Structures are given as C-alpha cells and as structure tokens.
Length: 396
Image (tube, rainbow, N blue to C red; front, side, top):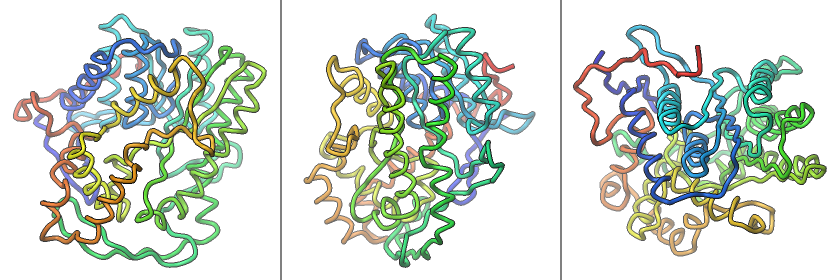
C-alpha cells in the first residue's frame, strides 16, 4: 500500500516501514562513525522502540557490540493498516543487528505487568544468563498496577494555580495563549504511579531476586528538567512530581544493588520532539526557539547524539560516573548553558505568529515530528508501495 501521513491533532495515525528503517539506519551509521564504546555487553532496554530507548539500544549494539533485549508495547500491523512506528523501528533494528552478527530479541507487551517481566526474565535466563545494563525508558500515559489492579492515568497539569502562557500549533505556526487548570491531589498520585520510579524498582528487584544481574551492573532511567518558562506546567507540575519520585528511586535502587556493586542513575536529557512533548502546551514553542539557537551555535543534538555522549562520556568513561550535586547525570548541559537559555528567553518575549518562522525553527520541529513516524527522510521513495505487514523477526 501507499502510506501517507495522516494527522489527528498532535498525533500521526500512520507510519512508514521504509522511513522508520531509514531512521534506524541513520542512527546506526552515526554510532559506527564514533568508534567503539567500551560499554555493557548484555543489555536490557525497557521501552526500546522509540526515542531515547531506541537510541540507547542502537548505541549499545553498534557502539559496544552488545547483545540486546528490547521490551516495548507497540501495535502490530494488520492488512491495510500500518503498525505503530515503534514496531517498524524494532523490526529494522533487529534486521540490522542480525546482519551485523549481533544478538537481538524483543518482547511486545505491557512492561508494567508481571507477565511481561516474567517473559523477559525467562528470555534473559535462557539466552544471556545475566544482564550488565538495564535502560528504563518507558513513556506511557497509563499504567495498570500489577498488584492492586488499579488503572492509573497521568495528567499534565500545574500544581496550586492555573497556568497561562504562550504556545504554538506547530502544524500552522499560530502562536496563542493557553491556560491549564490546576490539578487535584489524586492527579499527582496517579501521575507518580504511572511515571515515577515504582515500576523501575520492581524490574530491578525482580531481576536481582532471579539472579539475573551481573556484578557491577548499571541501570539508567531518563528524566527532564528544562527552563523556567516551562517550569510551572512541567517540572513544578504533576509530571515534575513524578520525575522527583523517579530520581529519588535511583538512590533506593543503588542501595539495593550494593551487594553486587551495582549502581542506578537518572540521566537528565535534552528537550526533543517526541509524540508526548508535541502534545504539551508551551513545549513546542520552547523547542522551536531552542532548536534555532542551538543549531546556530552548532550544539544541537538529537536522541542518538545524546545517547552516544551519555554512554561514552558518562556511563563508560573509564572512571567514576560524573553526576551533579543531586546525583543526576546531566546530558542537558548544552541546552541549559547560560548563553543558550538567555537567547531563548529573549526570543520567547518576541515570539508571535508573524515572526516565528524567522526567529524559531518550526521547519526543523515539523521535520523531526514527521521523522518520528518514518516520514520526510531523504532517500525514501514515498510514492512506492510499502509492505505494511513487516514483522519483527524475534516476535512470532
């Protein structure tokens, strides 16, 4: 079938197999261009199909020749209807890994569930014995709690008072005012249940109890802090409370891993275009101005550049992992530099519908958004028939 992008609000409801494959290949080529990374050799990536999780898996495999197991929850294809982009990303990754002689298997299902944890542990035990790196990169709006049976839904809301500021519809370039009502205490609790650190700790506890963690194992989860302009709706809002919980959980996990000299870290990453960030008011406008500034400075990075830097300069640099005063790895250092933030703040005051194409990088934002779904890649002929029924080799 011919597959074209179809938009519904801030979501693209189609994805392109060849375009997703090109995305994966581009990332692989970048990693290979940077040489060998002396990293982990047996890697579990929880949330492995898109964004930072996918780039972490690619970096491990093609930077360190690691065997990888990826866990994700993606929609497989049906006749005449494409799969979700993460499905095609994972199919492409496995195909490229196998061509390179690398072990790569995947599990598709709800990573919050006991069943998927059990399946994953059985696979590790059968094929790898133990893992020496666990990446936790889940991004889900809901979580069915495996112990209580309660379905928790995360929300994006400020705490205490209504939030109002500028935002942009990145499809049209229209800048407008947006207001978000404050959350309830229940909203905070639900968001922490979905996006906090409880499930990360459950994974590590289960793996440890089963004897599947190698000595000196590392585990890393991903977070974001961001600038003052997004603070009320993000870092000081419901999601911020969940990120606080996630970051605190790293210390709890590290304590539990002392007997095998293991460590848990949270890496604070840069703002990037994702399916989730595109739906957050204020963030698309901020990212558009940030991209413009960082590209002019020559410091712009995508997910793969971030992950190569995380692995080579922080996690596996031959010495102690560098962290800030709160124990966080900071890969957002280029974004949060004083000159970049001062410039973005200046542009923010100026930003209007009439000038945003000039002072911001809406074009780059849109391209990155389309790229998430496999569209707008050079070298892909989108006029040709695609095989929407593409399967992931290790998933029968």
